[in-house]
Image (cartoon, rainbow over all chains, first blue to last red; front, top):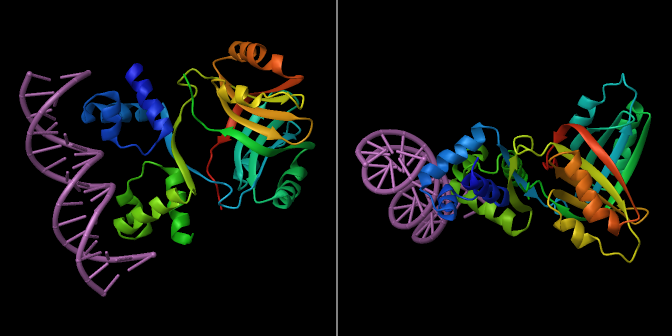
Length: 143
Length: 143
DNA sequence: AGTGAAAAAATTTTTAC
DNA sequence: GTAAAAATTTTTTCACT
């Protein structure tokens, strides 16, 4: 990983569909070398994938919430949480056997229905944090 | 937005660098029509961008935390939070004038330093949720 | 909104340095 | 490691249904 690789990662984080030729122009290297560097970053697992980002509002998903879920040690809630449509993130967090999930739904009603039907039965307690507005949301890493 | 558009969005969410020719093959339409559909989805703002996903561990960013920040009504902390390197998300959440940020750092030390230097001075209180393990993390939307 | 073909551009592969 | 050239594939445009 040198400075050129870091430049490539920066470019692909900004626009994953940038053509290899354009990346080559930006980093001032031949297209063939550029391509082999990108392939190497993929093979090494430094680049793990490329995702299109969609507009939630346009797709009718206006509700975003984070939910802290407390469970007893013996409950296996993980596979259940992961499988819920709308759940974008599932984290195991420190303290009190807690999970933190990030969930996107159509509205408050669909969120409440989902929590009631799929989560409450498996947990001791849930604490829901409703997002009013999002000011920044990216998976970009600065390093 | 018909079923074909939804299929395109599904494919590009899974692999943003999939070639137009391959998308065309998957949805069984001519490349020219496929391209115009993708362009339309971009122009309509349904596709907002394409991001490469990187391996945090490989880049030395092993720490992930969510921080709830309580501020007084008159403080403008938003632009400050957005500008912090490592802050991937900033949300304004319901209740108690709170912000929720998602932040990635090298270790606990760099997290604590960052909170002390950049956040604490501007806020009434902070509550940090440390992530131990991440079981799911995607921006993919199901609709 | 779709097809198919042709032109332009990009990618992959080979080759040599 | 680098660069250049050839072969292949993809992207893009256009005339037409």
